[in-house]
Structure formats: structure tokens, C-alpha cells
Image (cartoon, rainbow, N blue to C red):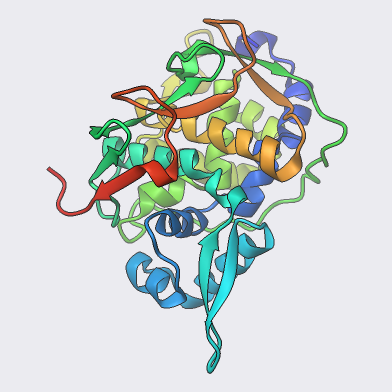
Length: 314
């Protein structure tokens, strides 16, 4: 879909986003702590105390996130001590399929993060033996894919549940959120849906509020903080000086791969349905089936083929 704000079918977009696998997946794992637990699991963390000490997540929050990830069959608990009972948490096959998304979290942090997270400083692709950066590519043609390389078709899926439109309880986020503002904000469900809606052509406050079913107070806070932290920029509309338009920045465009990979995982592993938002790769004309590849040898990257180095960033 290549639309301008004047020609947008806002009703179609509202229905498509509401029934998208992305929107529903973000209800389950659309927050920073869930993704940090997943990143920890891929870095070898398995025990509750290890997650808590290395990630810094509050114990009750960690318990809730682990229960959710077990319920979703992303992690599987294994008893390693009987008195008292203690469990180690191992990634399932379904959980391993999230590795590409997790790599894109790492890539975003390298480019735009505040470098306060305990993440690997360098990734090594064992098959080729080189340090690499993860790249999202098209499975059909093998070319690297960016946001500008895609067009979108909106086809609401009647087999996927509709969002009720009821307001969700979402935490207030400020740019001073204990050094984690960039991570908390970019993994916030509303922020990622705002970026998605702008990608599809929404530019104005009233459009975003309507298609995303966001209350004006929540939307106003999110937009202000996204502008403050560099995820969006705001400008005066050229055709109507009384209105403001919201535009993506390099930092928010860099989240595109994360969004696409999460939606694809939800299609294939959670809902087993095509999403209502369907990307097509302009270069080869094929529906996009993304994969993450090594920037050096261009082979697909698997968790078991990657080692990492930690320490101070150069």
C-alpha cells in the first residue's frame, strides 16, 4: 500500500491493525522486561536468580514474565532442585524462533542505545569465523530489506480476534526512566503501533488516535516522549499551518526489522494465520518472508552458530 494521508482508508487501516498478529503479539511480549528475559535466555541465563541479578528486573515482575513465557511455550521450566523447588528455564523450539528478533534488539542498541544494558559487545558467526552485524533479508531473493523496500496490502483476517478497543493499562514512560528510557519506550506496545501506523501513512494526531484506538491523553504523552527521545520528529504541515505532522527518524526506522520479525513470528508460531498487514518486497515482487543473515557471509544466522564477546564497547 502506497498511500498519502489524503487518500488513506482509515476504517480499513483501523480494522487491519486491530486484527494484525503484531498488535496481538505485543499484548503478550510487548514490553522491555519480556524481551530482556528473552535476550538473557539467548545469552545463557537459565535460573531465576541469574535473570534477576544480571537484568535487574524486580522479582515479582520477573516471576510474572517467566510465567507468561512458559504459558506461551517460549520457555520450558526444568526442575534442578527439589527442596526448595527451583527451576531452570530453557528456550523451546518456539522460543528459539525469536532469535532473529532478539538480534535486532541488539543491533538497535549498538546504533542508538544508551549502552547501559549488559549486552554482548560483539557477535561472532562461527560458520564463517567473522564478527558480524545481523541483517534482515528477503528469503525469496536474498537481498537486504529496509522499510523503503516494501509495500503493504491491508487484508483484515476474519479468523483473528478483533481488538476490543478498550484502553490498556500502560505505564507512564519518561526520558529519565532510570537509564532505560530508550529501551522501555521503543518496546512499548503503543510506541511500536504508532511507528507501524506512521509507516502505513498516518501522519496526524487525529488519524493515529482513530486507527489505533488510543485515548488522546495516552497518545499525547507517547508522541511527546517519542519526539523527546528521537523516535519521532514533528513538523508543521505544509498544506495547513495549523496542523502538525509526525514523521519517522533513523532511530524509529531502525525498529522496522524488529517489528516485521515479531509479526512474522506471531504469524508462523503463535496464531498460525496470515496477518492483516502483508508486506511485499518491491525488488523481487514476492511476499516478504524475512530472515536474519550474517553481514559477512550472508548465510542465515542461528542461535547455535553465534558466540559473543562482552566487555566495554569500543
